[in-house]
Image 1: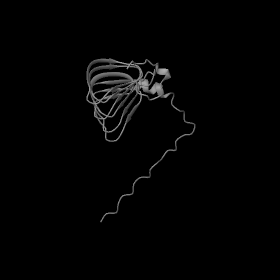
Image 2 (image 1 turned 180 degrees about the vertical axis):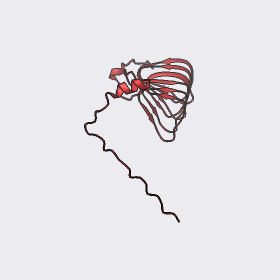
Image 3 (image 1 turned 120 degrees about the vertical axis):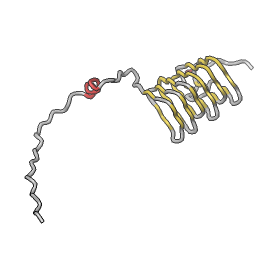
Amino acid sequence: MPSVAHSVSDKPDGEINTLLGKGSEFEGKLTFEGTVRIDGKLSGEIFSDDVLVVGEGAHVSAEIEVGVIIVEGNVTGNIRAKRAVELHAPARVRGNIETPSLYVDKGVIFEGNCRMEGAGQARPTTLNGLASAAGPKPTATAQTPSISAAPAATPPKK
C-alpha cells in the first residue's frame, strides 16, 4: 500500500502520525515531525519539536529532546522538553527532566532531578538577583507602635 505524505497542518490535533507498536523494537536515532507514539521498546536518541507519547507498557532508554512528551510507560534517560512534560500513572521515569511545564499524576515514579525554565526568561541565580527581580521594597507610611513591658513583679516568698 503506498504511503501518503501529509503536512502537519492538515492533520487534526492529537492525531498520531507514527506508531512503534507493542512487540516492536528500535535502536538508534529517531527524528520526527508530528506526533509519534511508542508502545514497544526503543533505545538510543529521540529528537523532535513535536509530540512524543510513550504508551503504557513501553520501554524507552534514550536521551530525549522534544517539544512535548507524554509518558505512561517506562523511560530511562534524560528528558528535555521545550513546552511540556506530562507523567501519567503508571509511568516510571529514571533520569533528569528539563521543561518549562511539568504535570505528574499520583502513582507516577520519578527518580531524578527536575529543572524548570520559563520560555525565554532569565531566572535569577543569586540572592541579589532574586531581590532585584522582586522589585523595590514597599515604603511604610505609618510607624510601627512600640511595645514596652512593665517590670515583672517579684513572686512572693514562701
